[in-house]
Image 1 (spheres, one colour):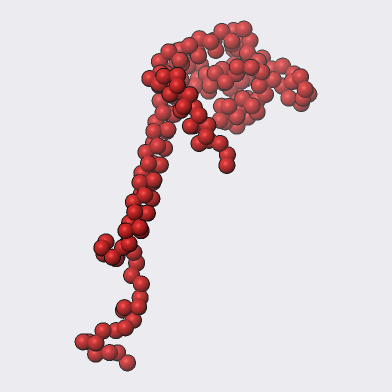
Image 2 (cartoon, rainbow, N blue to C red):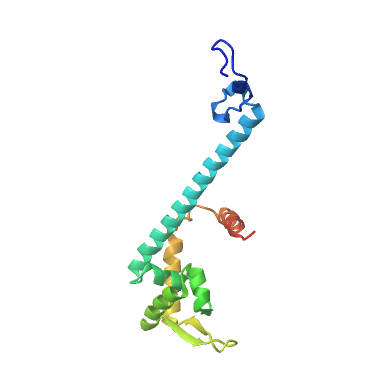
Amino acid sequence: MTPPPDVPDERVHTERVPAERVPAEQVPAEQVRAERIRAERIRAERALCGLVNGLAQRIGDHLREHATGLGLTAAQATALRELHGPLTMRELAGRMSCEPSNATFVVDRLERQGLVERRPHPTDRRARQLVLTPAGAGLRERLLALLAADSPLARLGPEQRLALQELLERALARP
């Protein structure tokens, strides 16, 4: 039986109203504070990710610009930058953030240019090590000098670069 219109239905008073429809003065201050903190964390995360992405893009543009000036592709320049000692193809691919097959393609081109050699691995007969030739080492030094000269990180002092490096390493560390 339905109550007469002037008598309130008790069910209306026992149902929960979703939080977004509750007037602000009825929401506990603690809940409001928690929601503000959560929203601020989301904004800060988005802003920080945007900055990291922007920096990565600027570093990539900077690398491509100097690579082109040296007659290299960005991938070749990245490989030369990362080849500071003997590495396996898998190690180089990890440093280049690509698949080993992609690194192989890049190294094949560097090898044809006389910049890299493949040598037997001293302890693993299945693997080969990548080593810079004297010409490759010289080109790598020129590349590194160009990249350092007007780097997007050049505005940071040595202590700031170290602090940034430590923060990025902490952010990238696996839990």
